[in-house]
Image 1 (tube, one colour):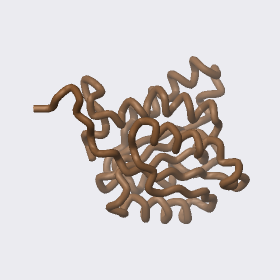
Image 2: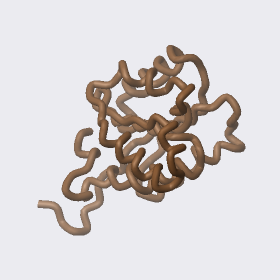
Image 3: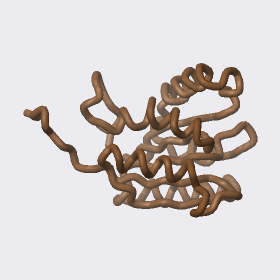
Image 4: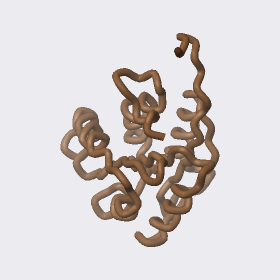
Length: 166
């Protein structure tokens, strides 16, 4: 039986920023994700800034999905209506988590109005790895991490948490 002071093993999380303009020096959304993940007691085991066509991004995601040292992939950027990250991820998923996108749309609408519909946030389970796609803006990243991702990385979130799937 678990005790109230139970401390789980830190999750191993990889962060990808999808951008042709960002560098390590100005990857503010990636920095925000890495900071929030470590503040929540988890470990960042991989980090990258990538940009490419759909196949290149799919190949990159597949490598991380198949890496046993990674539990969760958090991607920021590449979810806009003209971007391709959802199309790159979808064929790799064993199960899509449509509620993630639905909740993202709801909280995004409350924050920025109808412009929120232009982001195609997505989440799913692929080969035992949770994958989250979120917008690349700092505001969108913070909104998504605080309201959707970080709570689901805590096994004690009730009535259930996605982390229980990995």
